[in-house]
Structures are given as structure tokens and as C-alpha cells.
Amino acid sequence: MAVDNTLPVAVIGAGPVGLAAAAHLLERGIEPLILEAGPAPAAAIEQWRHIRLFSPWQYNTDAAAVRLLAATGWEAPDPSALPTGGELIDQYLTPLASLPAISSRLHTGARVVAVTRLGMDKTHSRNRDTTPFVVRVEHADGEVRDHLAAAVIDASGTWSTRNPLGTSGLPALGETATADHISSTLPDVLGRDREAFAGRTAVVIGAGHSAANTLLNLSELAAQVPGTKIVWAIRGASAAKVYGGGDSDGLAARGQLGSWLRALVDSGAVELYTGFGIAGLAADGAVTLTSTDGRTLEADVVVPATGFRPNLDLLRELRLELDHGVEAPRELGPLIDPEFHSCGTVEPHGAKMLAHPEQDFYIVGMKSYGRAPTFLLATGYEQVRSVAAALAGDREAADTVQLELPETGVCSSDIGSSWDVPAPANAGFVAETSGGCCGTPEPVLVGFPTGLAHGRSGEN
Ligand SMILES: Cc1cc2nc3c(=O)[nH]c(=O)nc-3n(C[C@H](O)[C@H](O)[C@H](O)COP(=O)(O)OP(=O)(O)OC[C@H]3O[C@@H](n4cnc5c(N)ncnc54)[C@H](O)[C@@H]3O)c2cc1C
Image 1: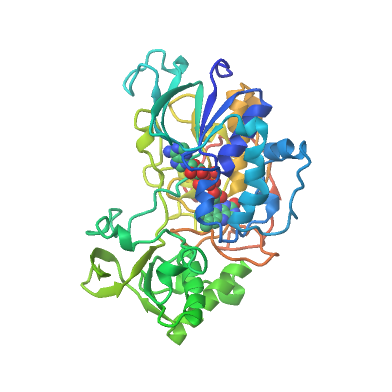
Image 2: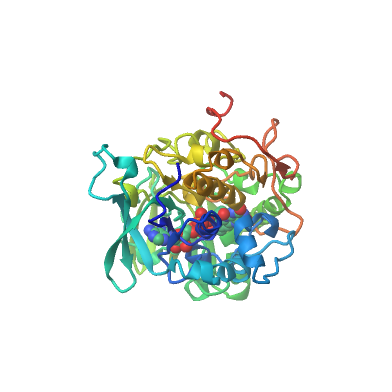
């Protein structure tokens, strides 16, 4: 059944997936209400605009969004080129959000703080499915307003909720109090954040590509500015996982990144501390990090490359069904659980697999992957195509995945973030093969109903 079309469908977040959701809703004749916390669309990507994506343009734009743009004479970028985050914003997301059809429905500086049902909390079941949603929004002028919606699509990403530095999922002791010494996850050390790092000691925490990328950029800064010191602390006993397979790595850029990093560590340009789980931080001018086995490190600034988790606080009054570990929708969780899928297996999925007991509520995009780091934009675009079809009552379109999608996603050795690998123009998606990680980089055409029964890896 289609949603009540007297009310809009609230879309939380104007990142690439939220904007794509709006484009698909518009095509279906459904009114979107797009609520973006940042001062402009794509506020999360704006934070990592200096990072180059390693999926080419071909996979980074949504079909419905492109149809809207094409009608205005927009020219698509070279499909095989790899944009930076900034280029994705400037050449695609800003033009898309500026189209009158989108901009007239987009509210920036509008942070969603809660979603519930009108006049009922989570415990009420009677008429729940037909009762409008209430979306509570903190607007930039400080005013808090409630908006009614027929359905809610949460595309708010995970960027604003990084994992803490502590080893048990909690902030390390003193982490909150030393926040002034902790940078963003992917600081632009050669650009806008240069001053915080030049001639100072930085300690990078994490064993993923976010960490590797920042370490490489810091080494370039160290070559330019004497006195810049680079320390790298990881929990594991060895950095081999981050170094990857070198020349034999299925993803050329990743292999190269790992080899560069190994050379920096071998030469002493980067000081590596292994087995350094962080127990506490204290600041007195500099910041001192204490490991769980009592060692200490001193630095001016800490770079937390420890990955992300979804913010579920705003969904407290909704009936969610999430995988207990990954915090993705329950059926999706086992398919992407990094403990079982070394390459971030991606099976095509849509509204059915993303559904919750709360009818007409969906989590899509990066946030739909919960704590798993291997989300693809292409996957998100297919999610919202299917969700818009479901909300329009077109069950057949909702249940059929029609997208040319990388069969299994992108290999990842990183449970922090696996995205920020600077890649050459020929790098593409890497499929997981039965023999292990990283087979031929070849997207495949898939087209079969979603909502199939899946278990954890190896137990269907
Ligand atoms: C460094 C990096 C590189 C990546 N590279 C690739 C790549 O090469 N290829 C690929 O396919 N994927 C890549 N990804 C993964 C993923 O595609 C991106 O994270 C992408 O930005 C996810 O899009 P999204 O719309 O789901 O979320 P986001 O881009 O995070 O957008 C969410 C939006 O919601 C807003 N928001 C947050 N909370 C609220 C709230 N409470 N109320 C209102 N608005 C809110 C945010 O301000 C933001 O604008 C990369 C990710 C990172 C971090």
C-alpha cells in the first residue's frame, strides 16, 4: 500500500544518499522534506573533501538524480575518473541540491533530534502503522519544531559519531576531557588543518586506511616543516594487515599505500607502537596517552582513525530491528559483518531487507551499514530506489534489484574505515572470491528479488 500522500516523506540528511532518496521520491510523485543538519548539503563529505574516492564517477551518481540534472543541461563527469570528496560535492551534489525541485524542499541547519509517532510512544501498537510520524528538528535559529511525515528515511550517515579511542567501545578515561587535543578522523594536514600539525608531534591511532592516509600526508608535511614528528599507535601486534599485499594486492592503490607506509616505518620517519590499546589520556600542555600495559606516549595532537558507529539516539521511540553486533538492519547485518566478511561482501538489497517493525521507516546509506565500514554509494542508491518504490506501493519494483552493482563490494582489511585510499584512475571495485580477498576488479550486473533468506557467511 502506498503511503498517505497528504504528508511528506521526511529524509534525514542531504548527503549523496539522502539527495538520491529525494530524487527517487519526486519521480514517484511523493513529496520529500529533506532535513540537513549542516549549513549546506553534503556536510559530512565536506569534512573529507581532500580525500580521493576510489570508486569512479560511474558508481558515484544516482540514476534518478542524474535524470533530474540532465534535464537542466548538466554534463556528467568522465565516468572512469576518480573524484575527490570535494569534486563529488562541487560537480554533482551541489548542482543536484541547487535544482529548484530539490532546494525548495531542502532545509539546511535542520538537525533531527528525534523521530516518533504522533501521540504515541514506542509501547503503543494500536493504529501505529497508520499514525503519522513526528520528526523533531532543531533549526539553526535555535528553535525546535515538530514536523509531521507519512514515512521517514534516515540517511544521516555515521560521520558525526566516530568510535571512541578506548579499547572496550567506551571513551578511554580522560578522552572527553582531552577533546581539545583530538582532531577529526581525517584532518587535512597539508591544507586547512596544517597549522595544528606543522612542527608538532601527532599520534595517529588506528590500523586502517584512514590512519594510513593521514600518516602519508603527515610524512609529506614533515618533509616540508622541520620538527613535525609522526607517531603511530595500533592495538594489534603487527601492522602487516595495513601494509597489505604490496604489488600482489588486488587493489593496486591499496597495495601501494601499504608499501609506502611500510617504507616510512622502516626508515624511522614514522614511529610505530604496536599492542598499544589506549587506557587513558591526560593533558597538561601536551597530551599523554597511556596504554593498557602501562606504556606512555606524548603528543600535541591525536588523530582518531578508529571508525564510526550509527547514532541511534534519535530513533529511541521507534521499533527497530537491528543486528546485535553490527547495528545494521537485522537481515543485512550478517551479510556485511566485518568479522565474517573480510572483503565486505555486498549482496544487492532493498526495502524488504531494510525494513523494521516500524512500518514506513527505513535506515539507508552509510548508516544502514551500522558499524561495518564497507558501504558503497552504488549500494545506497539502489537502496533508496527500492525504498521509494515501496513507499509508492510498487512492490514489484521495490523487490527487484536492477542495478549494475559490484557483486561483492570492496576488499577491506580495515574495520575502522576502508574508503580513503588514494587510487590511480584505473582502480575499480574488487570482488571477493572464494579463495579469499581480492579477485578481479569487475562489476557485474545483478537482477533478482531482494529479501532472500541469508545467514552468516557460509550458512545460508
Ligand atoms: C573518507 C571516505 C571515503 C569514501 N570513499 C568512498 C568511495 O570511494 N566509494 C563509495 O562508494 N563510498 C565511499 N565512502 C563511503 C560512503 O559512500 C560515504 O561515506 C558517503 O558519504 C555516504 O553517504 P550518505 O549519504 O549515506 O552519508 P553522508 O555522506 O555521511 O551524509 C549524511 C548527511 O546527513 C547529515 N546529518 C547527520 N545527522 C543528521 C541529523 N541528525 N539531522 C539532519 N541531518 C543529519 C550530515 O550532515 C550529512 O550531510 C567513503 C567514505 C569516507 C568516510
